[in-house]
Image (cartoon, rainbow, N blue to C red; front, side, top):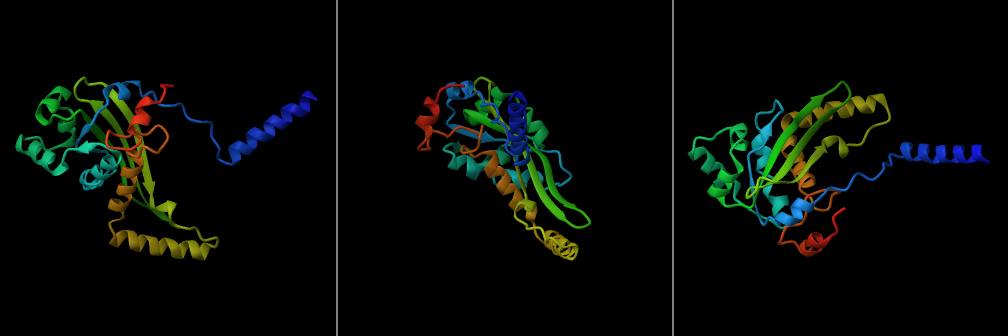
Length: 225
């Protein structure tokens, strides 16, 4: 009987692993986030770890929309960028190293979003090509320097492309995809999707809804795990 029970458990666990089911991730601790209740956010230019020189501004240009849709007031990124340049700060590394209290005194925002572009660009293979964007981010209270939230976002063209079952079909798809990727700015489009996933309040352990969201009160009142 005991042997049968162990075998049954093994079958269930194996089925879960094969089906890609994973145990629930640990709930994010939003205690500091709920205590801070930020209403306005300053987006700093992302630090770029990829070889693509346009990655920083491609990602930056599309961060405001999902954050605004989440219910926050976002300081205009063009005005912020011009302010940094006017004060001789031109690189994301230098800008993200500015003390939080100085950023608060200058811009008056409650919190700042620090983003790093971990990967951005197209990889070409023999029978395939793929444009990916991977981001990491943290939200910091500029009034206290407290870390409120951190997370990551990822998007890829491979998510939308079907895979042919034949070798000839795979080669043909690879040729077509590489031509399309070469003449199109797919990186910018994929970066937009990565931004949306990074800053979506609907995702597991994502940012909390802002004060302009209809679900704000519910999110603030939720019990701390």
